[in-house]
Image 1 (cartoon, one colour):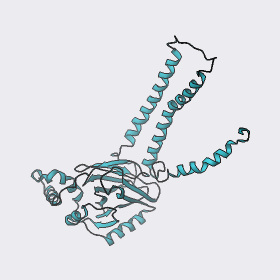
Image 2: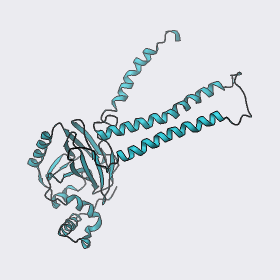
Image 3: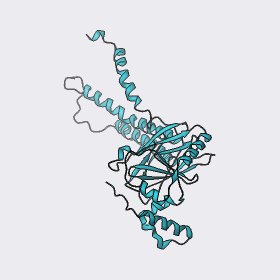
Image 4: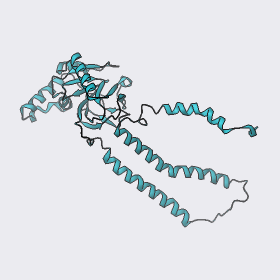
Length: 312
């Protein structure tokens, strides 16, 4: 029976299964389209390989020792009084020390290189985007372009994008797997993230932190255009179809809603993002000293007309 068995038949039989499993890597962190994501993928692979240098020999030796010292093997040497081996001690200490040292060096370098707060090295001016996580949608504000969008962002490829991120609801997690990094969005706080797309395309973004009933629909598209001209055309489309995003419009938008369609706005209020953060500090109008601070405190107080949504 076993004489007619051919391993190639088994491999061909498993190939559809392997192919199906590998297709799951498309669109995720193992299919990077930006420099940050590519560096993170490299880090994952490097760390995994270094750890497998220990894991694989241990697994192999487990089966070898079990086979060699099985009860039916009368040739196995029986040494009940054995207690120490300098060679074994050297192996079990020196090899892990080398591997941990390599991991430490890699971790130190990549921790600083992939710091989400660190601006990316580029000769191109970054695009500034302010992100507000809501229940259950994403608001993106382009302060330099005077526009805002819901559940859609765009930027040219090879141009860095600088994100300032906060939340006007439960804690969420901002994540575009193919471009790299995920970072939390928290009420009353600001986090930062710097990304870049090295290929044009439409990349999926979502919240990777459960935040209530509409969490599964809290998704958005990140569009990396081929040229700056295409990005400018997108900006003009937003401006043409937009409506002002003032305090009243924001209060209507912030109400909980699920599976929201893409929406475009013009941002009439340049202090909106900061006011959303200060909303959870009661405006702190008593500390305002300059005219801008007084206006920010007044806008923050206006946004507090509706109580903040509590985490569910």
